[in-house]
Amino acid sequence: MVGPQATLNKIPELYTTNASIDIDLIGIAKNNNGTAAVAFISYNTMEDLLKPDFFNTSNDTVNTMMSTVISATLPKTTNTTLTKPVNFTLKHTREFVSGGNLSCVYWNITEWIVDGCSVVKTNSSHTVCSCFHLSTFALIMQTSRSPPEDNLTQSMNVVFVIVGLVFTSLALLTFGFCRWKPGVNNVARINLCISLLFAHLLFLLTQQFINLIKPHKEWCAVISGALHFFFLSCFVWMFIEAVLLFICVKNLSQISSKQRAVLNSGFLIVIGYVIAFVIVGVSVGLVPEGYGSEQCWIKQEKGFIWSFLGPVCFILAINTILFINIIIKLNSTLKNLKAEVSQMKQTKIMVFKTLAQFVILGCPWILGFFTENNQMMEILFLILNSQQGTFIFLVYCVLSDEVRQQYVKWMRALLP
Image (tube, rainbow, N blue to C red; front, side, top):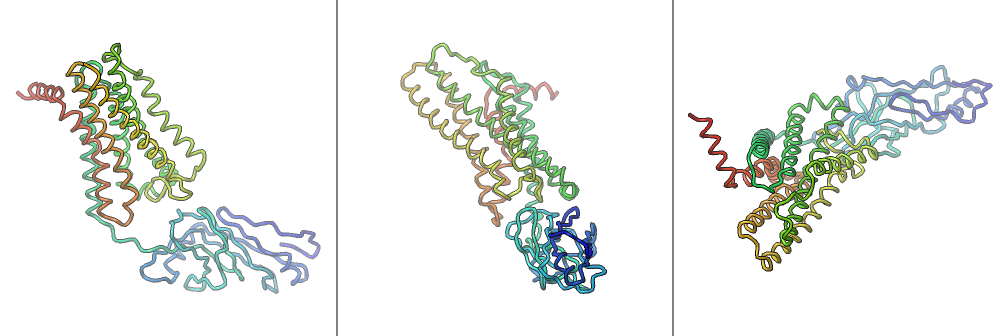
């Protein structure tokens, strides 16, 4: 409040937890013998009573309360005419949906209406409303009504992910317990399977309990960050395997490089996870609010999704270049080098398997750009990405003669 002896030239903004008000109380006081007062109130749970459904829109529109409910009034002020419009800055309490329409509204006995209020400016976290009167206010977002839930797609999602998890686990056990030929380095494949297993398991559990997790925004943000890390790790391990294959093919022309390890396994493990960790850490440092979308994934605002898509596209491009060089180098070596037939055959099989792995594990993510409002593309994206572990099991385990022989020995030992 201000009195006749007030010396203020401007009233500072009044704040609540999620809102602030900018009002010309000095000008109002001049019309009231130098005296005026303003009360600014925030109601933490009022949106549960004054629901956004009281805002009349078309039937195909969903109304969402985007702020807490606030009130402003001029107590003990005779002339309540505003000398200037009042500006309210409202913090978004829910994620802003791209394409949503924001409305500054006030409560009029039985409904929310917009008369005398308008949106001045907005961003992903706050909106400024300007009103020519004082009342009880809120911010409401209108979005197109979502199509009914597709239970078939959700069921397919659960089934396919579970199948993928089973075969990923079988591949991981095979890499860990089978005996492999000298010189075969499964470090990249083992850690690729570990990353896939944790990523898909966390994704499955999150989607099954999304309604319980979503109210806890901190947990949702942590989960989206963990998913970001594990999926990035998958691509980093694919890149490491391509580098190992490139070195292997290059060493075919060097007599002294018979079946020797090209890089230390411990060093590879550190590199494989540190790169993904650094990318996620930098992303958190630059845009800490970028995690925790409605589905507990990376948010679309400010192009933050490129913290995942950017490294993925970069790794896919580098891998493509590496595989082109591998094929050219292998073809040249086959023509000029009189090497052992078995060694050449083994190398060609390894090149084919790794190239197929690159196509199956990397390229389906490109489909993610075309899944919006396209159910067939969404189902195809779901199937290909959930069965990455299945593909690894088939190519590196089932189609390997030495692994199949060990499977037969295990089965004979288990069965009477």
